[in-house]
Amino acid sequence: MNFHGRIMNIAASRLALRDAESVSAKQAYSLGHRDARHAAAEIANEADARIAELVGRIRWLEYALAAIIASAGECDVPSDGVGVPLVSVDHRLIEDARGLVNSPKGEVKQ
Image 1 (cartoon, rainbow, N blue to C red):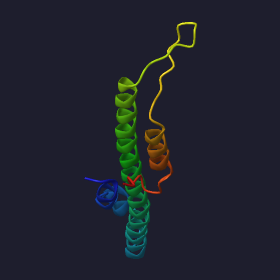
Image 2 (cartoon, rainbow, N blue to C red):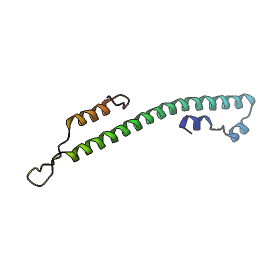
Image 3 (cartoon, one colour):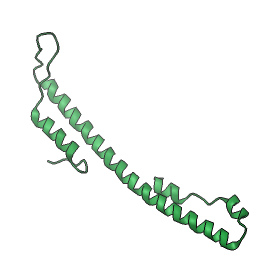
Image 4 (tube, helix red, strand yellow):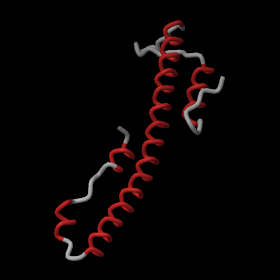
């Protein structure tokens, strides 16, 4: 169940309702509880949407990284003279990865 559903299923405190001194106090508590749940659930919807967006971006970054690594494996690996390898990659893959990072919703532009 997503956060919205979990919040909407939060029950009112039976103790608070029991201890309310009047019918109007019980109604006020119930209405406040309902309003708070609805407001919190809307915030949760926003969070769920943002989480989904970020998960999508992470998946595409994983894809782009795998493509860069695969491309690097196919290229020559020159050394800087001190024994540190300098990996050469196809710059189009790097630009594709940058495009993914800068894309508003992590969408792939093909």
